[in-house]
Image 1 (cartoon, rainbow, N blue to C red):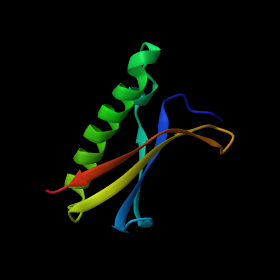
Image 2: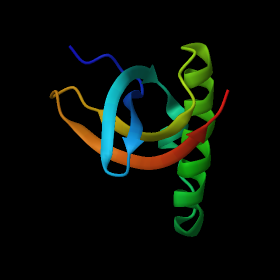
Image 3: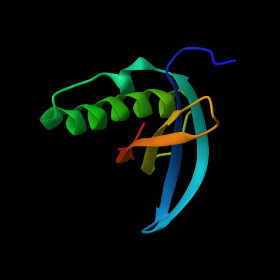
Image 4: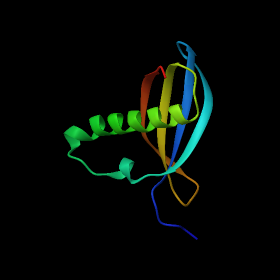
Length: 94
């Protein structure tokens, strides 16, 4: 049975060298923020900014090591599928 909500997976990969990333964390989030509708010319900027704020919060909570992180957000669906929402590169220094 489908439980309504806004399920997302947020994957965190730490870049150890250009092109080499280690997948260290996956956060499951029920977050409406990634679903908010904006004008087409603002959508990408909003998603980048919102993802960065969520990532900084998560990386701080797990005491992640400093470095460059590649953060990808996926919307999860009841059929066990997921759609890519956004991917950002983030410089993290706690």
